[in-house]
Amino acid sequence: MGQAAALPDVIRDIERVAPDIVEQASKYPSSILADVAGRRGALHGRIGPLSPSMRFAGPAITVELRPGDNLMIHAAMAVAKPGDVIVVDGKGDLSSALMGEIMSQQCVALGIAALVIDGAVRDSEAIRELGFPMFAAGLNPNGPTKFVPGRLNHPISIGGVTVNPGDLVVGDADGVTVIERDKAASLLPLAAEKVAAETKRIEDIKSRKALRPSWLDGALRAAGVIKEGETL
Image 1: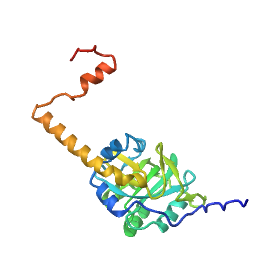
Image 2: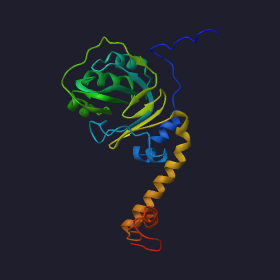
Image 3: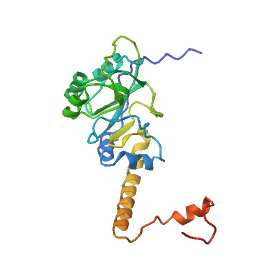
Image 4: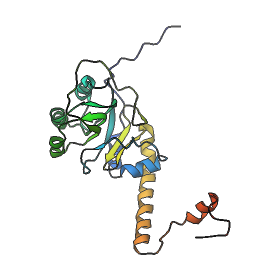
């Protein structure tokens, strides 16, 4: 029985979440999508936007690299298509930046939707002024090296979440949520229902029609905080 050929380190062609799904998903907050996905898929809170106004949605181009070396980010930028989101497993290293203003300018010119890095970046003021959605774990003035090999468009782990190439990635002021490519379409109706329910809940609070959740007493009884038949 012949041995299967090993996957190349750089995979150029991937199956992406459909553009219409991305467009619809972009209307929802990252928190709504995480909720309807079962309260999962959100990256660790250390990974956030350089500015709260930054937001994006798009298919993932995944990058695995050695800490402090950005060679594979350059490779990802060469392979990415307009609308893609480059998602980088930078191993959480904050000892040097993996990219800055020049690469961000290049991303804008290429039409890349955003960059998500579990690592550091620099030139933060210039990137904020540019408005390019940059989500990172921190800042550091040190520059990276550019000679250590890595992998492109393989599954990665970033911020406690597995990301596969082509998955849906959505980011805003709260952080980043990743939804599996094949699951994304089925969650959109649930997201619409969730938004409608939360909108009604807020209206009921403002009108003082319902100042506590309808489920509160039942949950307190189930937790043993109050007795059966008792209420707050």
